[in-house]
Image 1 (cartoon, helix red, strand yellow):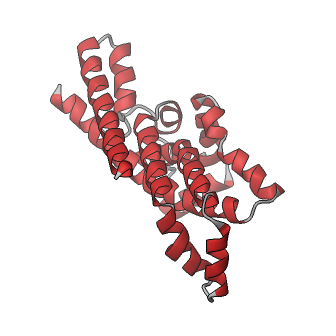
Image 2 (tube, rainbow, N blue to C red; image 1 turned 180 degrees about the vertical axis):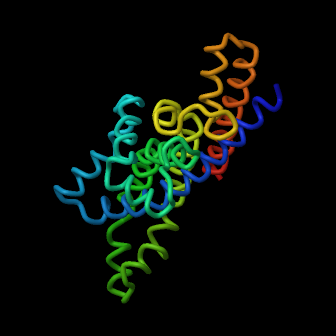
Length: 219
C-alpha cells in the first residue's frame, strides 16, 4: 500500500511543482500586463484567463486534447521538436495542471500590483527608473504577499487537478497516475481502504501547505 500511495504522491508533487513554476512565470507577466495596461483587450484576456475556474474540467481537458493533438499546429510543432506527441505523458499532466492553476495565480498577483500606490511608481519613474527596475525593484517587493498567496493557491490547485489531467495524460500507473487519479482508480476498483489512505495523505499535504503559508503571510 505504501508503494501504491508513494509513487502517485511523488508524481503529484512533481507535476504540481513544475506546473506551479510554469504558471507562475506566465502568470506574473500576465498580471503585470493586466494591472499596468488596462484596456478593452487586456480586460478581455483577463476574463479568458479565468475560464478554467468556470469550465467543467472535462471541457477544459477536451480543449487541451484538441490543442495538443497531432491534428493541431501546436501538436505538430511539439511532435517535430520532440519526436513524439506530448499526450498521455506526465508532461501533459504538467500542462493541464498549469492551465487549471493559472487563474488562481494571476488574480492575487494582479490585485497586489493594482493595490500599489501609483504615486510610488510615478516617483520612481521621475527618478529615472525604467519599467524593469520598477517591476523588480518596487512592484515585486511590495506585492510579495499576493505573489506568495497566488503561488500557494496555484500549487494546491495543481495538486488536486483531476479532470483535465485524466483527459490529456490518462491513467497510467507509475507514469501519469497522480494521487487524485489514483484515488478515483481505487474507488472504481472498490479498494476503499486504499482510497481512504490516499485521501488523507492528499488532504493533509494540501492543508499543511495552506497552514504554513497562512502563518508565513501573517509574519
